[in-house]
Length: 370
Image (cartoon, rainbow, N blue to C red):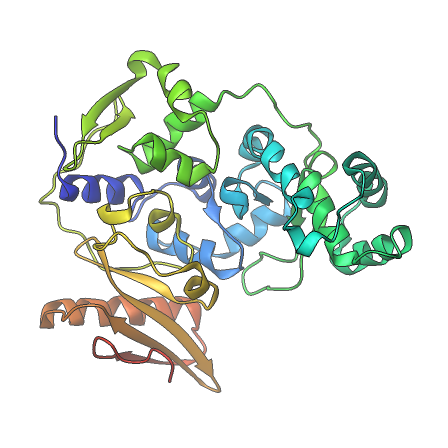
């Protein structure tokens, strides 16, 4: 069966809970989505606001404090907000790839060339111990142990080599303080689970992001061996083809969405996984190219109109005013502009309830900066 791009779009949005906000508790939604990208404080809150009816950001802050949610480096080597079971079972798949990064020739301009990786790891385990530690304190220890090396590079190596996570206060609602790091086992009171099959992880990916090609799965995870893992699922998956004739895999019992379903306007957060988790992004980004990661790093975020990314926005807060500036990529209809403005005002009320809201829709090609 051949699937149109529009079927793929509506199916992705349905599985991401972007067609209709969900009643699922935050923990259940995080598990279904296999985490929320969380390099910065705000994006996971925007992601949950877009997907959850009546979302209360205090729920995430409380969960970080009681350790029922954690911030850990997982897919694509980026920080994700996940439940402890997912932290323990996904990290063993990701960790071997992370550990290779510091000792590649290009890492920090060769800052670690000549060092024994196992000795560096042992020092890191000894320094970090069982208690959380700030990056500044880690740098002090690194400088003492390796006086002839860049201490920042040593700390980066430890954070790649050791299974670690970020502890509060960073990640709480409104708190963008510098990271404090802990080894995973002392923080969660349990060891990593090396027995969780990659095939099971990919089946979950399909339930949240599918149907998808094996290259989509690899783009999402930055892991290899996709084809073999999918084959292990047997009749738990079925196949389709896309408009270009490529094979798409899907969970056998996962329904496809009606391509004629209406898709409400959504103002996603920067780094939202709905935009980043396929090699071919044309199911949600019309030209297949999302904004560059550099743009996301500048807090430029996607706008979905009729289910597709056809604009970006950024919030500028100054004094008593919060201004949300919108740059369409195409000419929206009057009804679309009205819907975008309404959703933008709702987002500002969530993000900046104490400031006066201002929404400005620019013309295509304008400068997003004020």
